[in-house]
Image (cartoon, rainbow, N blue to C red):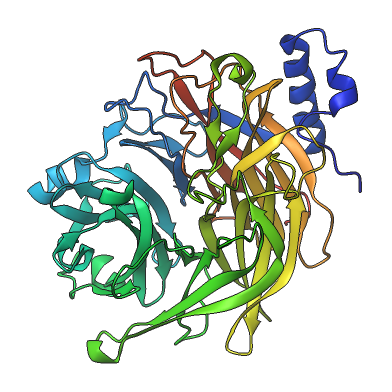
Length: 502
């Protein structure tokens, strides 16, 4: 199988006459690889709370696709792509409707999931400051347009667990996931007095059993790691495992969390990931355990845009305007990327996750690293892995992966370079046969973000719960340069199905 690049390589680029031809070539490559449909999501012009931060994500349900951008959401019919709501809804809408003032400030860092086991939508968002809350909304039905549809809403005051020694730490980059015994949430702890330096993490279990029925939830159970933040935390941004498909793991399977282990000291590479596990006991909370970290050995990697003197400085992805503006965008290479997707197969369990890496310690070009993990001796071990970097020119970053019922792995991501505006691409491969990845273009961007180094902290690949085959992916792009105080970002939602999934 030939691995085709996001755009053909340097030799061809030398004689490209114009970006319009490059666009034609990109579109042709995409259609030649896999059949897909794509449509417009929320953009800056339709976002009711317009900001620079987009963080596009979403999930496909039984009837609709639900998309999030900071700080709004919108649903779309899966067949016609028609919008569910007359306009994008402010992120605080479910809590305003239920008169929960602590959650009525439009919050950021939101995540949307579809609970495959309960067939319910989840919207979760961090709000507030200096009094912080984590707010979760669970839908009453799987149809956003159902008669009597409502949101069951819940909140958790974060300040007690964010405060250590009288000092309040900032809760950043929250992620939520579905597991049979709980909704699990992770947050980064950051020290605002040290430039928002990563100093630890928080994990919490929420009472899924009662929340999906709209009943009063038992108190969330939370842990902080380390107990007392002390210096830079190189294993930050834990991701909780999130179920794909309708088959749950065996009863009693602990929830797993995974994170990067950034290089330390004089090292420029790392050869491990971190694993934590949590087992919640709702009847006797004192029996709840949170253990780890346990090192998972992986092939050595250098995080994307790695800066040894400041590991959270992951800004190095160029755009065509970069030689003039000197602006580069964030690869988010200092962490693993949303989601940590779990699937139960008839004879084995499989977890997939991605990150942005450098192909070598001397090349700043960024690439996509993916892992498949399986249970091994009471922990998780690497069953398959690979790096998507079929050329030496294009930067691939901000990936998200999911796996269909046939074991096909699909990874969506952004691509950019000095000759390619930030664009959207994807690759697919089959894990059971360990096939090579095939890359295809989804949408070529036509402009750059020049007034910010931020290019979304995460994207989202999910699988349709009806056929368990169709992938849905959301990412961002531009058609007009975003300069000065302008906000011109756009989002695009794409669906595709591989022929090997029946």
